[in-house]
Each structure stands twice: as C-alpha cells, then as structure tokens.
Figure 1 (cartoon, each protein chain N blue to C red):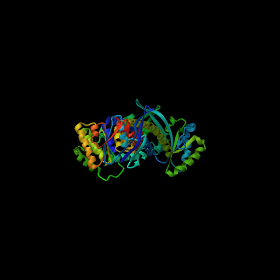
Figure 2 (cartoon, rainbow over the protein chains, first blue to last red; figure 1 turned 45 degrees about the horizontal axis):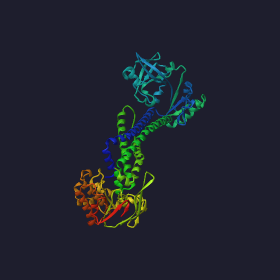
Figure 3 (cartoon, rainbow over the protein chains, first blue to last red; figure 1 turned 135 degrees about the vertical axis):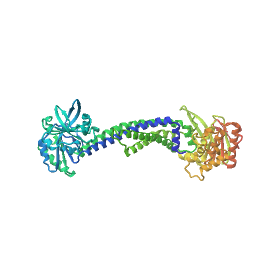
Figure 4 (cartoon, rainbow over the protein chains, first blue to last red; figure 1 turned 90 degrees about the vertical axis):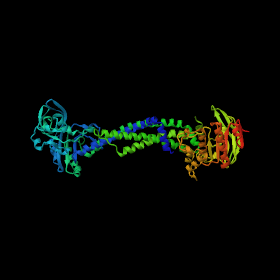
Length: 398
Length: 222
C-alpha cells in the first residue's frame, strides 16, 4: 500500500474530519476562483461594449481625464469648459474626419400618460448612430435634416420603449413628454445589452437632434465631441490637428483627446486593481483553511505515533515518514481545492445567464497549485514532527 | 557478530538526577546463537534490547556490528541497518491494523534501499505457507488470533533475511500452548535457517529453552 492509498484509507476512516478540514480549503478556493471568474467576465463584457461601438473613434472631452494611461485624480480632471458649435465646425474641417459628433447629455424624466421613467438624453447629430454603431429595429433614426429643421422627434432604446409602451413596436409614432415638451418617437434602436460595471446602458437612452435639444441646452454647449476617422492610420494625425485647433482657444490642461484603446486600458487597469484586492482578501480564507489542515495533521501524527514507531523499527528513514505525512496533507488540501473548483464551475454555470463570468485555465491551475502549496506549507511542520519522533519513544507510545 | 563494549546508558530524571539503566555492560552475540536476555522488570534488559536493535544509542561505549562501530553512522544509515540486519518480534505484535497480513509482512521491503535478490511477495507467501497462515494473507491483523498475529510478526521479521531476530517477550501476550508453539518456531528458525535469535524475557522457563542465558540485574550483566 503506497503513501497515496494509505492517505485515502485514513481519510475514508475519518470522513467527517476530512470533510470539515477540506471545507476550509474549499471555501478559500471557491472565493478566489469565483472572484477571478467575475473579474474576467466583467472585463470581457466591458471590452465587448467597446467593441460594439463604432471603430476609429476619438473623444474630445474637457479636463485631463487620463494621465499616464490611468484616470487622473488631480483637480484639473473636471475643469468645466464646454465645447460649442464653433469648435465643432473647426474640427469637422479636418480632412481625415468622416464624422463629427457633438454630445450633449442630460438626465431627464420622460413621461407617457402617467408612466414616468428616468433616462439619459443624448443630443447629437445623426452621426451619433454611426459612431455608437446603433441601428433602428423599428421605425427609423433621425437624419441631418431633422437636426437642421429642429424636428421634435426622438429615437429611444428598446428597454425604455418597453417600459413606456409595453412593446418596442407600439412606441413608433407615439409621443413622449420631456420637461413639458412633446416629442414624437420615430424609432426604437436595436438591443445592445450593457450596463454592467457602470458601462453605458444603451438600451435605455433617448437620442434627440442636438438643435432640437437647445430647449434644454440653452448655452448651446457640448460635454464631448466624438471624431470618427475612416481608418486606423488616420487617428494619430487627426489627434495632432485637433489638438492644434483646440489649443488656439483653450489651455492644454483644459481638454483631453482620448483614443478608444486608451480609455479601455484605463478602465481595465482599474478593474484589474479592484479584482486583485478582492482576490487577495479571499486568499486570506485559504490561509485559514491551511491552518485547519495543519491542526488536523498534528492530530493525525499524534494518533499514529505507534505506527510511526513500528515503521521506524522496520527501517523507515525520517524522510520516508516525512513524505508519508506530507503526501497525506497535500491530498487533503487538493480534495478541498478540487471540490472548490467544481463548486465554482457549477455556480458560474448557473449564474452565467445573469452575470458575465467564466473560469479560465489560469484559474484552474492557480486553484490546484495553491491548494498543493498549502498542503505542503501547512503539512511540513506536522510531518517534520512525525519524522523527528524518537523511534523508541514512538513504539512504546500507547 | 554484534559486540557491545563498556556500554553505559543514563537517563535524566526530573532534569537533574541521572538514572543509570546500564552500567559498563559488555556482551557479544555470535552468529547462529540461540540465546536469551533475562532479568526482572527494571533491570535494564529492555534498554539493552533497544541498543542491540539499533533503536537507541548508548550514553558511552561502543556497539560493533561485524567489526564496524555503528555509533559513527548517521540516522539514515542506522535506519537501513535496522531494515536489513535486525528483525523485531514484539510482545504486542505491533502489526499495522489498516494493512493486510501480506502488506504487513512486506512493509520492511518498501523501506529498503538495496535491490532485493528475490521477489518479496513470493518470499512472503513461502513464509506464510511454512507458518500455516497463508490463508490469512488478505485478512487484517485484528481479525486473526494472537498466535497467528505473532506468526505474521515473525514472518515480517524474516522477510529481509536478517542476521538477527530480536524477540521482546514474544510469548507474553499468548496463552501457554500458543506460546510454546511460537518458541518452537523460533528455535526451528535458529536450527534450520541458522538465524541468530535473541529472546528478551523475564520468565525463567522461557530462558531455559535457549542455549545461552544472559542475565541482567540492576543494569549489570551477571
């Protein structure tokens, strides 16, 4: 009977004890693997949202939002300059720019009869639909001529349409009231999902021609301007030219020009940091589990002093005894680790329809590696104690 | 074969006083002897047996095996010597209850570092056949009789073909009839297999069955 079978034999004789001891590791591994799975899912979901947006986007925003690739926390982050039509006109003259999209957004309450919903209004040109990669599932999107005619029309997200009109289809041609003004719903956008992790929930937005929105936007200013180029290669030169244009009116730290990827990597680095902290906290429970293993291994050594004495009398070396107990402790820890991993997989499977989460190969290897390591680290002291017993005292132990 | 020279063994009691278990003991056991170590409890015979069995080290003195002073050996070397040179038979049998009879007999072979010239399982089966316990190979020690358990213990002591069998009160836990059978078996091993056998006992009639009696009283050989 080898060390491994011997260990399993002992565990099967002490099922309750083995279960409780492995439970500590199970919970630790479960916490670490699940948090990692949620972190990975969230990251993938944010990346997907960015991917769903149009390509070759440049954002012009007030203040210094990004600094060295991370979100800035200096006071200049949110200086309150706002862009106006003059900026838009100048920027749209850059040759490589295909689409200049000013954005004015505002939280508003929209009412239909006695139904009220809170939503975010996006006032822009018809180009916003190209930039955000939004289409109309029902009805149509507003056009440049709607913008210029200041038509009282809106395009709304499918979730908002369902909340206000029961179905997206029924919303077309109906009117909604925003701050006392009536607007006709001419289109309902396609479902895009999103809204996780503070990302925009496109499905509940209201889009309005920006000139129509001057009713709310009396200063005729914009919080951001999105520039869309034809190709990737044009992004760099466009940023340079846009900078030159804006520097004529604003100070350097009063505005930022951000590429899509920069924003994505900044968001990702924040999520990575939060996730690391959470996983580190979860890892503490693994240490507690390890202490449980250590405790039970000391008990096991004490229970088996006589057996250790017999084995030593028959010629077992210290190292033979050490390995025997170390193998037992690693197996004990691995049982917990595997069970934790299995349970995580089951939980992820059931939670997936509601929350993006997945377990990658790294999590599996990490869970198994960490539980083996815990078996070794917390098993080595009890195993050393067993190996260092004097054979004569051990064999006489009753 | 094994010589103990001027052996002293002292234990501290309560940290200060020294209890002297063995005083200047010198004894030689020759190859092929069938001898007994006899003495009342507390005489130091168990201490002496532990030294001969390489389970313990003396405070002073030398232990020579085939002329080599084993006190110069490290723990691993002594473990290997214990594995190959000595076979233990205990009063309490000291079998491992979670292992089958066969696994118990084979246990010493799992700790050997040398290449065995025989198939261990085959040899174990032969010994069990000879001892009349072959049918118990797959049984667990706590399911067989005391006499059978002691036969398993002797089989385990024999598996490595040791030079010396050290039997500590081998009949102490057995009834008279079974005890006699075990003594007969040990005598037979000495006679037919020319294995050196040393029996540690406090019973005079057990010692009387051996060819040489080493008597120990108050830590001295008399």
